[in-house]
Image (cartoon, rainbow, N blue to C red; front, top):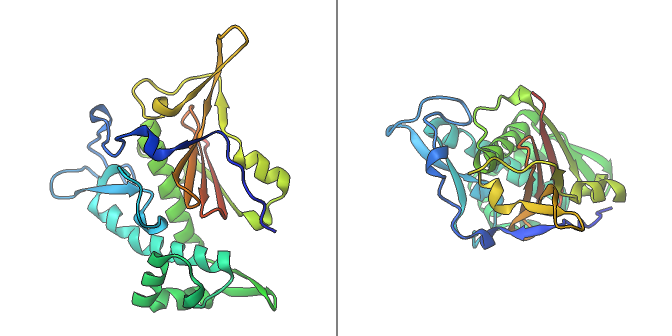
Length: 255
């Protein structure tokens, strides 16, 4: 059963104004994903999240970070696989006519092998409901990239190794009402984000009855309504992501 999530508090991404440019002092000469040196021959811009996970029309001023060409191109096929996988599981179908996202329909039309690969990994729970044994490596690669990108863009964390992140994912139909409520809560802290970080633009101050600061709250950022929302802790060590009102992702920096 799908339990609706009531994210709170929520800030619309476009209310931030211009956010697509990386702050000059945050620019780094290393790719945040693999650590290779960036120069004019290999430096590209990577959108957060990939447009493959969003719907048209895209939000204005898409967030982006510099990365190397190899990483930027290398994630593309995994992101397409992940987007198709998510759509098939959410709607319990492999029928292209029932897929609701235009970008997914375009992918399975141009690259039908992706849909066939996913169909071949089906496990039927009942005649009317199935689960998929996905390619864990590809799914993990996409989700870890999203987490690293958010931590880099919002809190200036660079070069986080995969083994430094604890990753947890679940679909809403596998979560209890209590689990959904806990996931929907923001991150609270006694600290403020680093001065100059983008996280400082969105942090909410928690005050006592005498208007004294007693903590801070990291609100949910509604990047694209009913498509992609995320929340990054002010401490820069935790991330929550909600994809297509269906997949819940939690990651924590454990080093």
